[in-house]
Length: 291
Image (cartoon, rainbow, N blue to C red; front, side, top):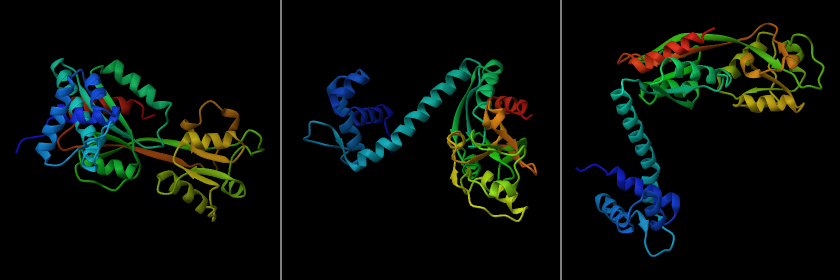
């Protein structure tokens, strides 16, 4: 059985994005008859209509839309493969796919990327925001190489978990609120507070922190994005419970929690086959940011 032609798939994607055969021809620097031929050959290969005929605008059939959606992933994977081969031929690294959970500070990531670029300029990171549980599954499915995950995680076949860092959680109080020097479960339970959504590690950590004091308050709002939580606090809507590294340069509004609450993180990576040079280089850089 013949494989699908990536040039033909790229043509169909261009038609879907630009709306006409003529626009696709111009964007791809191909003659209009070549565009038509690509579509006809794809339809013949799959034995299904991909584009509805007889309309000014090119309208894809449901089958055409499905092929475009999956085709984008094929084209992206093809680009990654070409880039990997070129980097290897030039004597440098490759592409490393890294999953990052919502709790990893955006202030730290640029520093890690800069360090990697200086130490290993041939290695390119592809970062994805992904939850810890999903990241563990994707490591096993070989669609991620490394993941920064909440700790602990259940053991998984062919995946190594290594402790990475443990960051303190703090309360970011609204600018117009009076707050004590340290925030306790008892004080916070009588105020509006917001933190991470159910199902996340930090939601469970905060629930346990309240539970140790015999309390079970409901949050004013539960969100998955640290920036949104910070904006709630800035707007005088609620206290935001966040990792310290997410807070930024606002020391006057930051209060430590009492008793202290820590957020542990781990590095997860596939160990079978053993990590290659590019993955090992990224792990070394991440390890340097463990403190």
